[in-house]
Structures are given as C-alpha cells and as structure tokens.
Length: 122
Image (cartoon, rainbow, N blue to C red; front, side, top):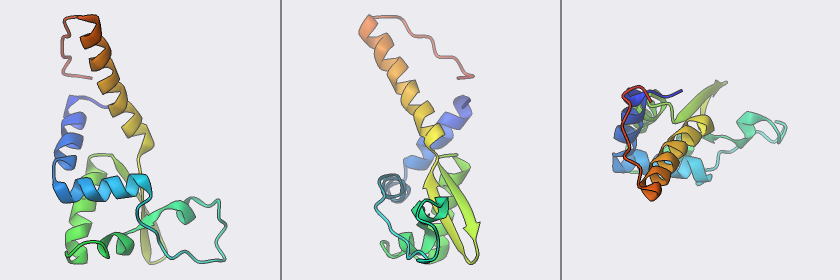
C-alpha cells in the first residue's frame, strides 16, 4: 500500500513534462521494441518497451532518458527488467490502480458532501 510520501513522489515524477510523456507512451503502448522473433509472444519481455525505443522519440541523449526512467521507477510507476543487453520497461499496474482508487475515493466523498480528512499514511 502506498503511503502519502509514495503518492507525492508519483505526482512529482509525473509533474515533469518529459517524464509524463514517457510514462503515457509506456502505459498506452506507444513504443515498440524490435523483439527477437524466436521469443514466445506471450513472454512478458515480448510485450514490454525497451529504453532505446523510448530514446528514439526524444532529442535527449540516452543517459538523460535513463535518468527520467529512474525517476519513474523510483516512484514505483514503472518496472524495469534487464534481459541480455536490453532493459525493458512496463507500467506498474498495481500502483496505477491504487492511485486511481485515491481519486475515486476523493470524488465519491466530494459527491456525498462528506467532510474528508486527509490521513498522512494513506
């Protein structure tokens, strides 16, 4: 479960335009990797995005993209898996579900007219 600090870290990470664009495209499948045809299509790695595919869409050096990805990973909104000489990236669906639930609760409480108390641990 994400605590308040974790949630703030997520919003700070997504508050940067480049990181937001990177995350949005990872989440929506906007990048594609050249995958080894011998690899099974149901393999996790076959469905993921690789760093070099992301870098091709920006005018930044690979180390800059890597720093942005590290921020997203540290905020727990993406996962990174190394396979051979590539690093593959996927959205962390569980974290996204938890953040979505936070907004759902806020909207529900607002619509009910309930006075909502923020809890520093949730």
